[in-house]
Length: 509
Ligand SMILES: Cc1cc2nc3c(=O)[nH]c(=O)nc-3n(C[C@H](O)[C@H](O)[C@H](O)COP(=O)(O)OP(=O)(O)OC[C@H]3O[C@@H](n4cnc5c(N)ncnc54)[C@H](O)[C@@H]3O)c2cc1C
Image (tube, rainbow, N blue to C red; front, top):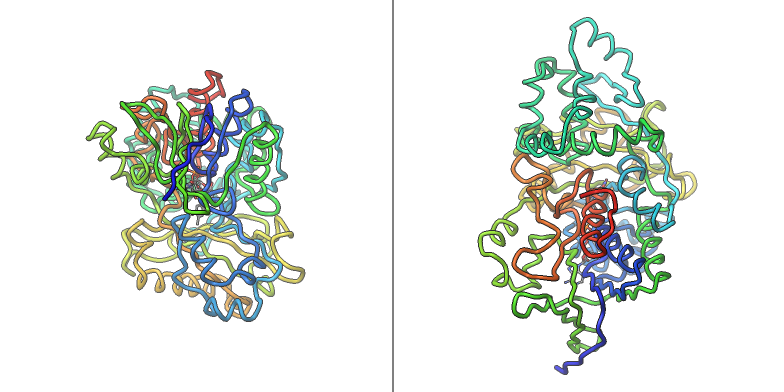
């Protein structure tokens, strides 16, 4: 194996996930000579979009290999994947792997980045709703509460508004302290636990934000920090209009737009290139070793290296012995939260029309008695009603996500059972659903959130952006200190990381 030395960069970023793209583009903007290296054939990391034609053309193995690089596999589909491909059923669909709704319809940390880069990818927003049993309620939005819920709150004198306004009075110190308090505990302390509907609504919103089923485990501090510093001020100032939304043309449009801007700013992007090692000498990052297509190992030098690889896997490429032992052990042990992320190609819509353009969720889609740690929640949208470009004419794309633990996500028998139970649930909820399905695929990720926002590891309890023990090594992505919903959190961590490198204030610390 020959070894070649390459030129030197000011900054090297390993990985083109949302966090890596954020850092790379911001540092390139400051005129730093920046290299961005990605193992896959496309940018975006776990925020992965695949066009149906690509799967039809490249086949099942190609699809499964691409998924595997992003912690995702396909335990189940209807019909089987080979038949879906042989029947060319995916023609005309754009499939975001998983659900990939964007928090605040891109008006959270995405906006902070887009305003700096001038990328502005069109997004389409939606409101959300929740089933409590068979009752369907619109979620609180822009100061409005569902009328039936409002009546209940008045009659029973339940102070549900506390959940939405509590964050307004909190300081950074309060957020830090509340990081270790669960949603259940906070609701009990504030008179919001006893009523099943009220707690059910809060539980559903909390799971939507954190992707954790069990409200005893969800950190209320993480939710309040995002509400207090991003959601509430932006709605108040008219900068945000929707609680969530989708990037038109698939989430890859956003990643590609940022990558294109990075190149315009003079950055260099290497795709299909795996970083074998982050080089560390005498407590300093000195560059990377990559393996190129010819099999040659190339060393590329830089005093500053950013790893966008989820922190638990960072030590696969960076010598664990270079870091404080206890810290590195803790980082490796941080747990993520997985998700079944089904998509359905539908030939007609059997859902009530009120739900066609609305996010819908239910915290009891699969009961824990079926073998789960906690009852399984699910959230779903008819994505093609918001963005018709993601399905062919006359067809509809429904996307969803149902959080499961990392362990559950890797259990084949349990996941096959879960996928079938999801079909049963949807048929029961929407009679005729089964006959409306042309095809259904259930990609399942064991790391939707790289580090679960639980009361033991949320926010400031995650990895710092500067590596302890190794000067010049940084981390970025959703496993690193940052706040808010998954992709938005990866941007936040990227903004924090970039500010340590450039010395500029990007509004989040
Ligand atoms: C199924 C699913 C559904 C989801 N749904 C949503 C949603 O609805 N809303 C939302 O906000 N978020 C959602 N997420 C989460 C979201 O995708 C992640 O939070 C976010 O994309 C994480 O970005 P990141 O920057 O942390 O890193 P990652 O996306 O993990 O990026 C890391 C990058 O590093 C690359 N890499 C790794 N090792 C190497 C190496 N050795 N050499 C070179 N490159 C390497 C990887 O290929 C990857 O591109 C979902 C995730 C999944 C899997």
